Each structure stands twice: as C-alpha cells, then as structure tokens.
Amino acid sequence: MTDPAPRQLKNLTVEDARARILEGAGRLGVETVALEASLGRVLAQSVAASRPQPPFDASAMDGWAIRRADYAPGKAFTIAGESAAGKAYPHDVQADQAVRIFTGAPIPAGADLVVIQEEAVRDGDTVRFEAGETPKSNSRPAGGDFRAGDVLLEPGVVIDPWRLSLVASAGLAQVAVARRPRVAILATGDELVPPGASPRPDQIFESGSFSLVALVQAWGGEAFRLTAQVDDAAAIAAAVQPAEADLIVTIGGASVGDHDLVKPALKTLGLELAVETIAVRPGKPTWSGRLSDGRRVLGLPGNPASALVCAELFLRPLLAALVGADAEVRLVPAGLAEPLPATGPREHWMRAALSIDPEGRTIARAFTDQDSSLVGVFARADALLRRRAGASAASANAVVEVLPLRRG
Image 1: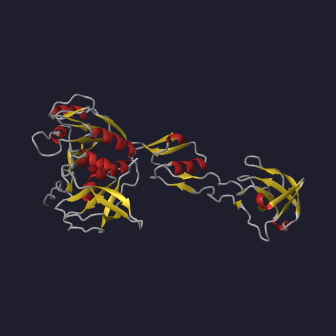
Image 2 (image 1 turned 60 degrees about the horizontal axis):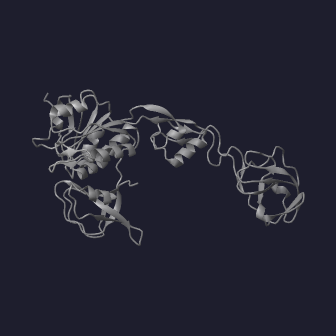
C-alpha cells in the first residue's frame, strides 16, 4: 500500500481554504444568561411557548363588547361594566348588555363583537351603535401570535431586539446561549509602536489589533490583545504560549521573508498547518493551523487592508461556527458603476462603495486604489467586490458579486 499523497497547503482557493479553516469547528459550550444579557448572543437551545399569546381573546380597539346576536343599528344597550388591560370584566355578558372595553383587554365571556367607540353614542347608562349591518369583530383570538408548545426560536439564531421581545413574550427570564469564543490577537513587527507612543522615523502606529478586537466582539467573540512583539521567534512563542484562548489570531510575519517568524515561532508550540497560502488578493500569506494543545491559529497578513479582507472571509465564518451559528458567507448581486479590467490568477476582493440607482438597483463602485496598505480606503468602503480568478474584463453595468460590510 502506498502512502497517501500529502495534503495541498499552498495556493488554495478561498472556498477550499475556508473549508480547511472550519474543519471540526463547532459550538464550544453552553451557558445560561439573564434575558437582558442575551442581546447579540447565539441561542443554544430552542425556545418554546409555555402559554398562548395572547392568552385570551383580546380587543383590538377601544370600544364596546356585546353579543353579535343582539346587535342592530341604532339599538340601545345597557352598560354593564368595563374591561381594561389587566382588569378583566368578571361576568358573562348578558342579552342587550354592553361592556366598555379597551385595546388589549380580555373580551368578556359571552361577547363576540367589539364595536369601536367612534361608532357608539353613549346616553347615561345606555349606549347605541351605528356600525352598519355587519360590523367587524375587532378582536384578537387567543393564540393568534403563537400557541402553547410552539417552537418560537431554533438554536443557532442570534438574539436581536426583535427576537429578544419574542423570548420575553414566552415568559423566559433566562436563556441558554453559546459560549463566546475567546480570541487572543497578536501583532508582530519591529516597525510597530502603539498609538500614543513616539515612533522613530522608520516606525508606524500599530492599528490592526484594534480593528480586529472590535470585529471579534461584533461577531460574537471575546477578544483581548497580546502585547505586540518584535520580529523575534522566542518572544512571539512566549507571548502566545500562556494565552488562554480558543483561537489565536496573529497579524504580520506571515510571508516568507527573513523577518517573517510567526510560523517558525509557533512550530515550537506544536503548530500543524492546515492552510499555508491562499490564492487571494489581497491576503495570499494568510494561513491557519492548530497548536499541539488544540488551540486554533489564524495568521493574517500585516498590511491592514489584507488583514481586514481576510478577517471578513475567514475569521468571521470561523467565529460563527464556534458558536453554532450559520457560517456561510453570503454574497449579493450588484451592477458595476465603471468597467473593471481582467483579473489575474488570484481571486480579487476589491474595496467598493455601494449606492442605489433610480431603478432601485444596487450599484458597486470599486475604489481606484486597491493597495493593501490603505486603511483610509477601507474606512470609506461598505462592501467587498469579488472578482474571480481569471475573470475577463467587465463592462459598466455588468453584474458582479459583493459582500456588504456591516457598518455601524
């Protein structure tokens, strides 16, 4: 029997690299949090209704509750009492009786019609109605929103403000959610100094870790920054080794130059690579693997735009998988504002601005300068425009694929 061929690690397509990065990624754990602390968390268990909503037939309008069989235009009814939200009328409605009722209040037993107050004329202890021959019932049936036992939310959905209201409507004070992945972020490079420091003429302010911390938190993880390290393999390994994290994200030191020492440093911690390079522009040096203790590692390029593009393409779906959420990267169609040249052998993700034309179509305009070092361009972009490897030139109005960026 011959040994199996070694697995290809270099120049993977974006899809193949993402599949490698997501291999074995699943929900890390479950914890129970208070309802008010669940916003933005990923649901880990289904939410079911313990009672119907509304739990009773309720009035949809302010008006008068009567028996439909008694109704006739202009007929007088005796006022028997009142039903308000939280203060139901306690008796059955009898023949030719009317109960004053307010929106959301229980419709009293025996009544099956609410005549709105605009169609009623009160005269002391009686009230007459002019609602036509067949007035609307103006009621909300018990269980009209959901019934007892209905599954309201499935595991894997993110609890947003609307879903939070639904959970509260089910009467839950606590909810089971996925544990957030802990992500340690390490920037490397002799040229880096922290914001607020006094850089030498040959140094720059380190910015990548700050944006990645914000992205990880927005994407459902818990992020913390490791102290940026110079190009020294021992120092890099020493920074990573004690980090209590599910995922290590490194920035820089990912290429093949004499100062690109992150992979050699982490090999001293048992790094086994799953992805070594990706056929993508920008971001070819992006890599991924695992340390011997099981911690995942995602290596991003040092150029800020490269790091941010590859964070969208690989880090975001990985974090989704680690909380049991949908990890698919969904693209949407857009028309090109201006022609684009043919692409080369690597897939190209261009920073672009989106707009809506008078016909309601989404239009994408790629920025002229796509240099991977330009943070200012990324700050103005609201989408990544995908150009597949080997694509021919595209004319204005051609349909392309874009990945909208979540801004704000």
